[in-house]
Length: 301
Image (cartoon, rainbow, N blue to C red):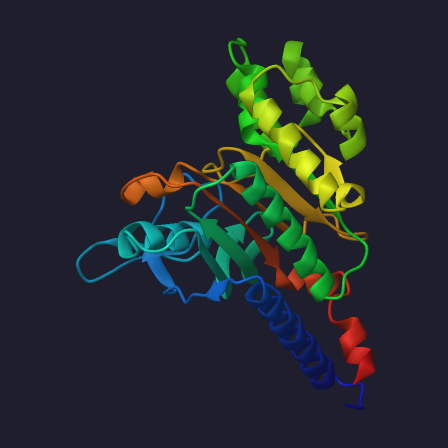
């Protein structure tokens, strides 16, 4: 497509977006993930840390919101509508979300995957999910990226019994490293960062089960050949408050914000029934495009 007008630029961007979305769908389906569709209007979920969502009242006075997140409705779908179904459920989506933040309203498209239920070691499922995120980034055409990886359970285990534990965790969630350091004691150790090799060699201070699980995930990622793609950041605490264990972010050069994130949320499904182990991630398609995703494919056509 030739031309340099504003409309042509919009059309080229749309074509790139469709290529990226198709590539992500293909990568997820190749690993056995089935695409689900979730209604745009969802029951309002307070306190999840997504900022102000867009909310409306229906004719019966029920509070609804334009979906600001996909993990909660997918989990609700499995808990309430798939009781006794085969496990693990491997589900994926490409969906538009709506969030209102400090920089104003934002309509964003996410592609993501959720692995819900199933027997076996959770560390294997965690490593599988991180590896799938890496494959999706590469399918989108990104070759330079890092996956910053931590564990909410390890954070809480490290801070357990400390007078300022809640303050330190909230400071980590805000990325206020000065405030974390001011909390003193074990909180300061959560500011450490290093490679997978350094963490496994003793750089990551481990004294409890959550820390040992994190080391097993790192060892599994090393066995998968992903050690060079992982930055160990034990104090990583995401905004979503439902995470219980592994958490990670996808980072690419030139982007100040992560292009994706994910983690383990074993307690979430208990809101609508019985708890099940669950882990997943989501990629922000707008940020992928800003990072250059789809450009190789666009140049080849």
